[in-house]
Image (cartoon, rainbow, N blue to C red; front, side):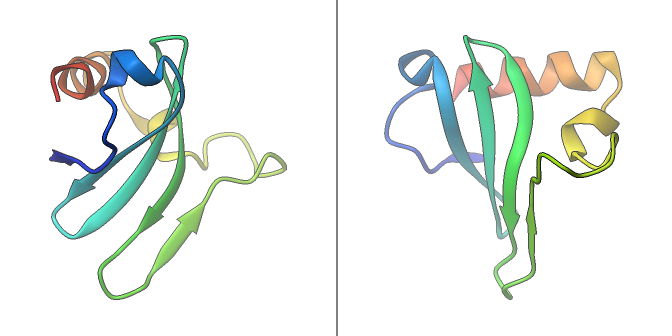
Length: 80
């Protein structure tokens, strides 16, 4: 995972933080220094998933994470 955004997780504090993971560009929302939800994922071949506020509960990939996975991802994002 590499940071695409120029600002760090702490500098953004509340807003979108973009990372690249194995060809995927992923925009994650930082809500006051807390991992909140995935805004958008785009693959290198153009496949795309976007968050929709009217989407059913559980369709956000961040919601699929266990507590441990959520905490680990948040720690990794803060370290970038």
